Length: 560
Image (cartoon, rainbow, N blue to C red; front, side, top):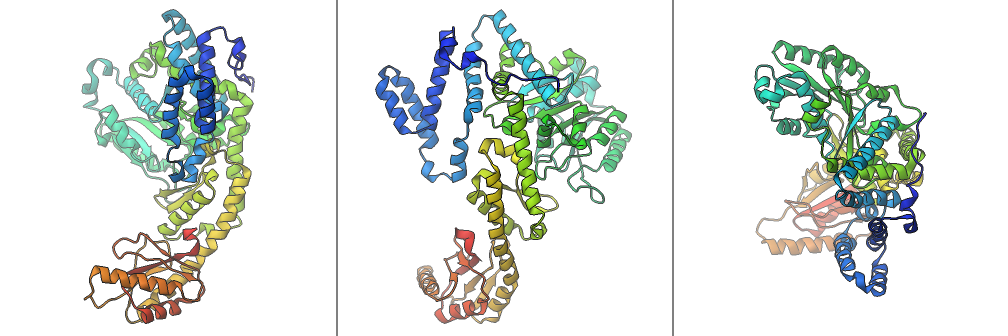
């Protein structure tokens, strides 16, 4: 590649003695101290207050912010605390950018115009080169859907010549149609229609493959038929939203074929998705590389590079600047161009090699987990959603730096997701975290398998035992739920007392079993169970001891 980014932030930000502007010097110093106050601990804050009494008001405000951020830290989950500890120096550059933007905005108008133009042009050039998008323009926005919204407006302006003058009247006889994948982000289509003022009939959800190819890729042949049907109905195919990494499963649509289809019907092609980050790497898969030929795509460098509070970026190609202005993709206001400043600073701080290394590291983490999973055939087995939810929650709790979470997919159901391109830079995920994740999987999966194998045995044994009833609850990730039937004459307090005594005696039994009390209507607590072939003994002991209410039986590690 014949381009480069500066490998370090300019020296004026590294040492106050090089800064001529006293306000900038003070800003850099204040930011440095503020971040130490907020990130380190109470002792540093007290030391600063004692040494610099003239700054007591500033410190008092930061004290309040720190208390709001960390006041309930003991009650927070470990994953939340971990996120707060990984801002990093490149993150400080992004935060400094917001402070600088406020300061720069009060400059004399002509000087402000020159500075913002330079910042915007530099950042746009770097991003377009970095992600292989030649001759592109860029729109910087806070909401990652806003870029697509503006692009839709640009497509409307381009396809309806009188739209600027007559507005929605020109759409009445030939309604535009926007096509999105059924694997797209939840609510994306409705959001676009609401913001554009279009009826929901202008949104067409395109199903994914059912016969051939990935079940998370858009069905291109079916899309072709849908477009033809809309044309025959007097509608105008306007724009197609494709995925380079679906939100749930991370699959990439057949972008090359979709681009050909869009050219055939004179449609705008927009691409979004986490896999666009890999365009910065030396080797890029052909399926993702095809995104560089699209009309626009949305990049989210903040999550990819671990940069807080930087904007998303929609890069696009269009020859008419007046239409881009009408669509809101460009602005004549210099202050709006300052949105790019945090990203401008962060890109320079990281440098080209630093940016590529972060994305490469995330890709390697994903590959490492994939290689390890190939040797675990039982991972492919679909089980009840409650078990996958339990597994995902356990993995997230035990290895918070992995960034795993639970997602719901249309065909597969509940799944555990690992998406390092979206989380590793923020959480600081390393190879050892992936290895630890695999160790936890190897520990938890056998528990689930044993539980599933014994679940039917437990149910049958309960049903054969007089005085017990089996309660089916598919949302409960365990062996099962059993209730001892009372005579119905005891009041609630008496039943509760019996249940408490029953629980105490069951836990005193010499076995590998551990119990806790459940509730008939809502099982707030479970009891633990290590599968050991003792289902009949459990039922016998319950009837011998007697009681009422419910006992829920789940894998032993569920409470760990």
